[in-house]
Amino acid sequence: MKRVFSGVQPTGDLHLGNYLGALRQFVELQEDHECVYCVVDLHSITLPQDPKELRQHIYDVAALYMAIGVDAKKSTIFIQSEVKEHAELSWILTCSSYTGELSRMTQFKDKSKGNESSPAGIFCYPTLMAADILLYDTDVVPVGNDQRQHIELTRDLAIRVNNRFDKKVFVVPEGRYLKEGARVMSLDNPTSKMSKSAENQFSKIGLLDDDNKIKKSIMRATTDSEANVRFDIENKPGVSNLISIYSAFSGKSASEIESMYEGKGYGDFKKDLAEVAIESIRPIRERFYEIRKSDMLTKALDEGAEKARAIAEITMKRVKEQFGIGR
Ligand code: ATP
Ligand code: LTN
Image 1 (cartoon, rainbow, N blue to C red):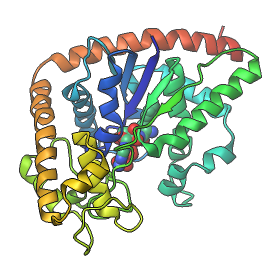
Image 2: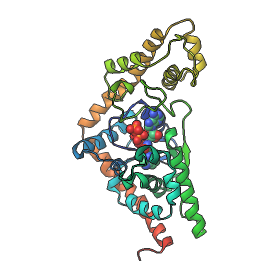
Image 3: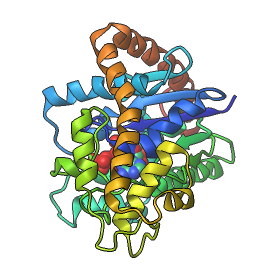
Image 4: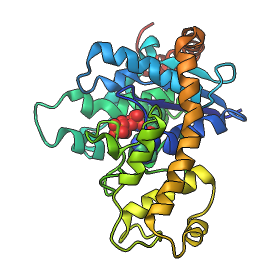
């Protein structure tokens, strides 16, 4: 069976972008893959986090994995910092990376903005992500489009190390990106992606938002003055984003949605979309609160860390042997 690995940062409550771009794939893949899903807390401290909030968010992300349908009996769910090999392999891969390639990463440029006092962790972030993936001999990595560059770097590093030792030290992974939902845009500014860290709460739909908040966010979403439900990313980014969200939830194509709303205004379209989103998110939210209250979560995380460690230890032994470190 092919192995899948993916991770989400516990930096805040998850939103529709996380779900439609990445998490939705987690559930589908567990039927015919061996899946390993991680809460990447070491990644989240590349920027300062409030320790109390961070701990809550770690549990929240793990509970959300389960609430959307990741089954802890089929898949491994664990917390990154509980498997020390992530940090260990990350250092080895940092030594195999070039400063040039790391400084060309879009996320590094966006987050550091050329500021010399930005944390070095932002710069090394992609080598930690490569370590996450390569530790588990991963074949497939389900992620949103914004992670493409990091996945390409992971592949380059795996190939570089393999070539250096003329041996298959690492499995070279493939990214898996969805067509619909791979990049959900912000509701108030459809030219930037929906983001956890955005200040305007109506720019995003959280997976834990109540029905009223979901409806309000959609009804307020930026559109245009044309009043014509048509998919055209360049000229109508707001409406196109809403059509993509509708499409991802309903399975209907953009052109089907266009014909459903021919001759109708944005009001009807938004009302129906709100209904579709509310009905899809409600069961996730309800299940989340059940899981969060029960002891299922800590049990799954204990077992998950153990299963993850068993795989990671074997990979690290092989890697250390190749590099000639340890005994
Ligand atoms: P933020 O939204 O604060 O920028 P992030 O990008 O750091 O958060 P993570 O929580 O680490 O997001 O991402 C989890 C997964 O969700 C990743 O696979 C990422 O590609 C995906 N993702 C994040 N934002 C979006 C989006 N707007 N559209 C589609 N996928 C997304
Ligand atoms: N960088 C990713 C989160 C992440 C990840 C990973 C995703 C860290 N390690 C390994 C897939 C596989 C992000 O910011 N979305």
